[in-house]
Length: 68
Image (cartoon, rainbow, N blue to C red; front, side, top):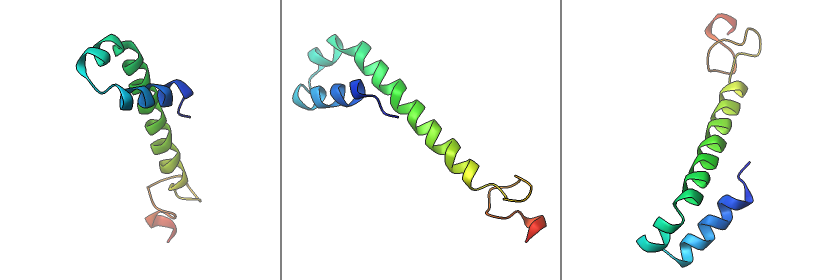
């Protein structure tokens, strides 16, 4: 899940898109970046899990080559 702090950081960045502000808020940027990366990794993992063979959990198709 994307955290409220990540959305807050992005909203503040939209209003203060300059190097001085960004440098002062670098820790918030790092936290937002990490949160976004974790969210993307979880979405990718969930997508891969849902595309495994329903019979043997192999491959990346709805049904692996052996079960077609």
